[in-house]
Image (cartoon, rainbow, N blue to C red; front, side, top):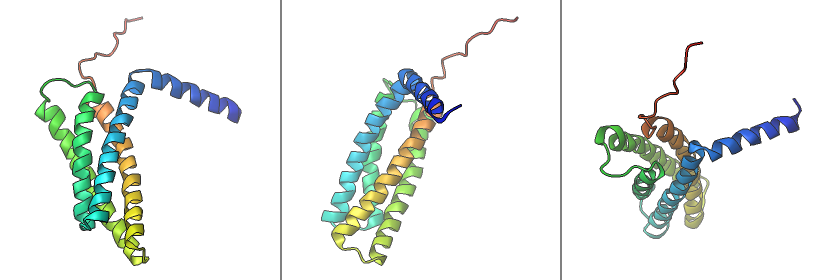
Length: 166
């Protein structure tokens, strides 16, 4: 198969996926991720740049802002209505979120330490830490989509199609 044929095939598969239920969820999740990342990035920048809060504390505060938005938007993404199920939905979401909090807080601390060690000014350090936080946040959102879509918010009431004996 030629490279052009291979790319056409991949494009066709991606278009088909984006038109189905997974695509609908993914588009909604991207919007949720944008809202969550924007709120966490703004919070991080203000904490570090304006209030000079320590990187670890700033990273955690930024995570709280993003996680709150993410939780609300994730329920909308997967069309969850009414009272959430504590054991099947809320608790697993926040366990995953706590893991992300650890990753983002450590990223913020590491990036800040690196920025200081290479002698960046305060403003440059804030931009550097923001960039590292943003990159890792995007990676964790991609990972969370797969966990949420295929495990946490998977429609458990759907039964596999029945097969008839040959």
